[in-house]
Amino acid sequence: MAGMEESTTMKALVNVKLEFVDTTLEILQQAGKECREGAVLWLAQAQGSVTTVQQVFVPIQDATDDYFRIPREGITALLRQLRTARLQVAVQVHSHPCEAFHSPADDTWAIIRHAGALSLVVPYFGRRTTTDTFTQDTVVYELCFNNQWCHIPATEVSRHYQVHA
Image (tube, rainbow, N blue to C red; front, side, top):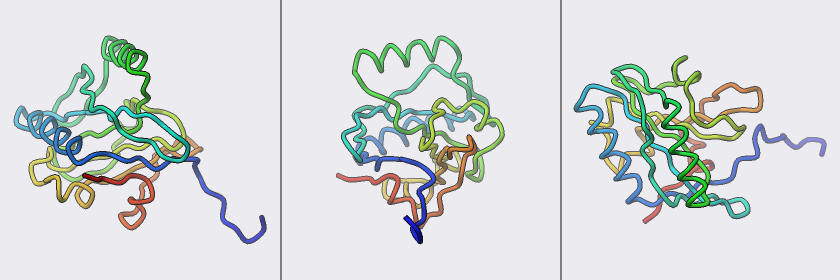
């Protein structure tokens, strides 16, 4: 319709429980203690315009202090888990040693590649982040239709994902 802005994606709102955020942070902080990035996938079920996270999944991963990637055996295990649990990858969450941004390595090794996919980057290996500050500390990116990771401003994050008890 004339005068209406067209959405760049067809993304459903992702709902995630506080306990899953807590688990995610524990995993990322443990990886940080080993001076390496960590990656976690939030597996979910979609119903209409809402996607509800059901599981935190830690894929087999190769990681150093400045990148992570999921090797072939990690992809195989992930696909097996998705098939068994009848879930989909809703969000990938990973840590950085310093500031949070989507690096060229993040772009290359992103596990989710569909328009509307979310990638959350937690700074400082999650050391400075708590469950209460997760949404403020984490930088959010969405894969746009042009296959570019687009930064979601902090004021728009709640339109993409929400944390609840």
